[in-house]
Amino acid sequence: MIELRNVTKKYGDATVLKDINLSLKEDGIYCLLGRNGAGKTTLLKSIAGHQNITSGQILVDNKEISTATLDTGVSYIENFATHFNLPVRKLLKIASEVNPDYDYDFSMEMMDRFELSDKKKFKQLSLGMKTMISTIICLSSNRKAILLDEPVLGFDAIMRLEFYELLAESFSRHPRIIIISTHIIEEIEKSIDKLIIIDSGRICFFDALKAIEEKAYSISGLRSDVEKAVQGLNIICENNVGGLSTVCIFDTPPHQAASLEIHPLSLRDLFVAIAGHKGGKR
Image (cartoon, rainbow, N blue to C red; front, side, top):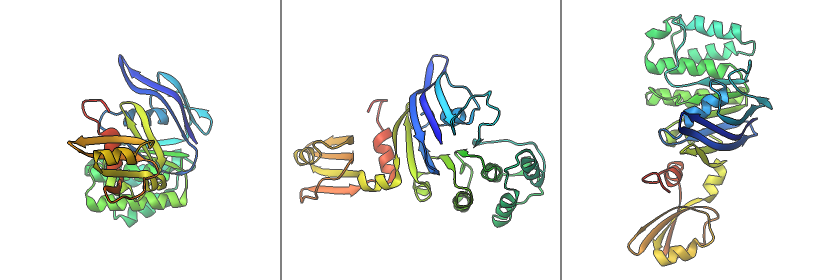
């Protein structure tokens, strides 16, 4: 379980995380979406105990997290992660020696499955290979929470497919909370259980993928007809052009009418509807 209570993080005069309350109670794969600068990396680093927050509390299995916490129970890998410049096999062996819960057999199995060389030194690898090795080490750690910050950065299309296979295999063997920050929304949609959207330092959406499939819709048509149809519903964005209107909702959709076009929103469309405001205003 991960719980954030009134979490605020400031860097000087800039407030990056703003009074965040969030509770992740169930094992599952969570996707963290947000625009550049929204606070995704700051949030993940804070949960991992890599930096202290300014105010509030972060708890993992009821243990308060800070840079002074000896064992946070969290494994975190950010993009461009670095390791000692040792042969990959040696890195995997060291990881298993310092962590008694480390699944060395799983890490070697994944190395073989994805035909990754364990003889080269870390710095000799491409960016994509470095990221894949870091991800394997992180997932093999068997910590209570796994945080992956842009894990497919530098991957080609085939490596991204391999990553999603790796993710599914790891979770099936060791169910726990896995949070993934990514910009490739269409691909991650097939792998996640719940979606978190952060915007301007605040959590503005958190729900299960099933709820999104049932409640996220766009309604288009004559403005007067659309306004009547969505009255009392939870509107997340609205666009009016002349006498026509398109409204995105997160609610039970209205009954289909001949004058309206009602379509489900994809994960990408939902994200744009919530976080795609212009000029910094919704």
